[in-house]
Image: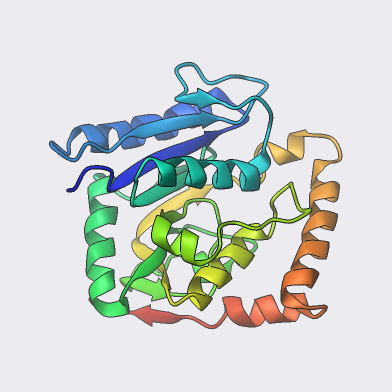
Length: 249
């Protein structure tokens, strides 16, 4: 694997024990890949409960969108090719090794799909994104939109899409959909892996902050109406349900 091929970044906010659980899962994988030299970093998003030993601690909470864009800009400048940007409130339910499996399967997917701009594990269940849900009997799925809980992003695709443009929507809800749609529009494939799966605790921290969910929902609605039109709910529903499953490589 070439130097700077991949960096793994876990965004920490909320309970340190959740972050530590995911670090433990992936640490074992990375250490079992001799010569891969894949950094596994925790980015502390100015969390009220700091993460001990974090790679960096931001001066203020940039929310998901700001932290994602900060990370992409930083690691793009450092010459990385791909970044796996993970929420801390998820964990892999697939058997290890996770990291080696993801990279190997991504390479095989590109033989079928061409350049994959964003790869993502599937989820056991999602109240918002049916296109992300695992279908264990299949191999992978090509989609039009991706949830932002665990995107593995090719930095060329990020640049081709013009980066993450969240406008006034600093809370970040919905910006993952706009970003992934722009990556696809730029000619890159979006892939969900049915054989690599996570369980995600939706809004594990957001629900504990008084008023956050309402404020984020209002900002999201305005943002999505601007990006996808006044009929954005129906537009997104159509895009989410338009996908192709691949049974074999």
